[in-house]
Length: 494
Image 1: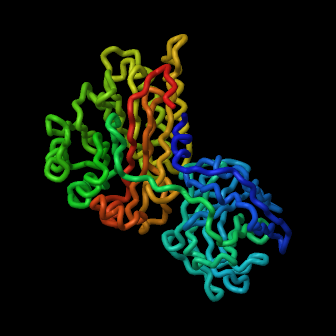
Image 2: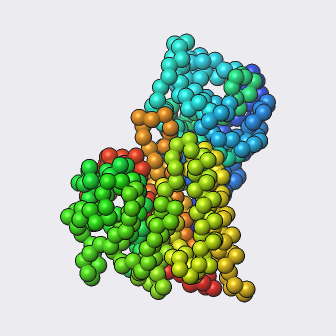
Image 3: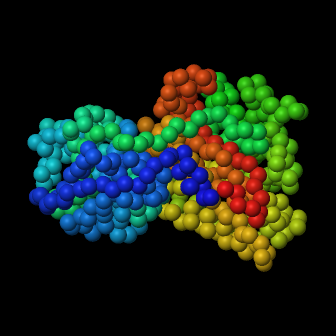
């Protein structure tokens, strides 16, 4: 079973068809959603903002009347959001140097806002310049991305994107009203805009909630988090609530620059004591990263400024191999690509070095995790995934089952989003920057999620001793959890 299939088990849905009527009006291709009362619409399939598109199957594709970039567009409705999927004619970096523009009629009145064909545009977002605009009284006013609440996936370059806007941006219209958006291309919005409308009736099915509760004995819980310039020590009470609610066994913490692993352990002993028979934490680190474990380390090393550890985790008889990495941030595509290349080449080269921690690493279950800062070009993602997968295949003996190197697709506990970074004060919308990969079938992924406390039900927050602001107060990165159990090579882990 793939990681994506595992997550789809959280949502039970059936594929149904959507009825549409298309007509041309003032250079715009207009699609009005028709939702017959006698049948369920395709909205019974929840959209997951994970940068994957199987959940868009069965929804009508809208073809632009004129476009140099957009091949097709789709629209869907969530419980609290409206979703758009676009297929492009070529790969682009959505947040840099492209003409894509999102237009929204947020008041349902074509007579207000900027006139684009038959549409009154109240909100405009130019992806290539990360510019959000409100059109009011014939004036264009720049606003923050947080004010319009836009997100998209994936965060790196692609030829397909999912985009979301909150329903509250449209004033939470009633069931008989439509929400209208369009995808256009600068500078010719009138000639290229593709308009999509959707009635504001609630979707028939919404994603289910993921609880924070741990799975039964036999699972190891791993937390990955960038703590933002030693934030663990600046806000110990906030982190204490988060850690006690999540109860991880292994912590991969980045941006711990000015404190040692021993200092991290001392802080944990005070606020989050270990719960193993020896009542102690084990730590390994270097400036910028620490790996903390309830279980002893069998081996440790620093390679390429990353932490490579083998942990004596229960059930993993020869140890669990954990690689904790951190790639360059922001506009440093060349450095991210070089680091990804170096990781893959180092793992392949040292796999045959009997003096290296990587010697025959392919024989151990592997977790590879950290803040990868995957914005800009998708090359580093592709290199890591394909490169490590190819090396595992190369290490497979004849007749043996090859391991798969897969990503843990982790949703928020209470919404269909996967973003792990959010800072409303900056120009970038929320994005997925933190990733965890693992090998199968020697690891079985039981549960994975991202903690975003502002979305959580107050009763759940109280039950777990959390406050609604905890995950955003702690850091600009959100805690990412996976629960894993040992599998067996040659055995179907489903």
